[in-house]
Image (cartoon, rainbow, N blue to C red; front, side, top):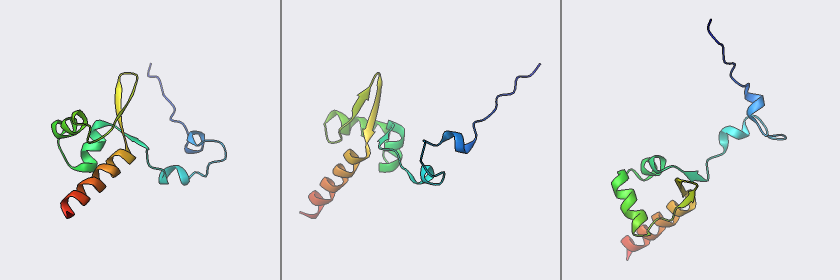
Length: 85
């Protein structure tokens, strides 16, 4: 006998008062290591070197590490200003 798992409807996934199309426009505040690598187009090894050297700030939630988008933006701005000097 096969069990059927019903997927939640799109309107069930929204927060109260939130427009259904708004959820699609929101971007995450925190990225995984893999997502940050994709944004910066660098390897995991390079990203971990940047984290160890404190060039990019991270936060830990339990045992997982997340990279704030703001941290990546600051890093990019710093690198741009260094390259322009």
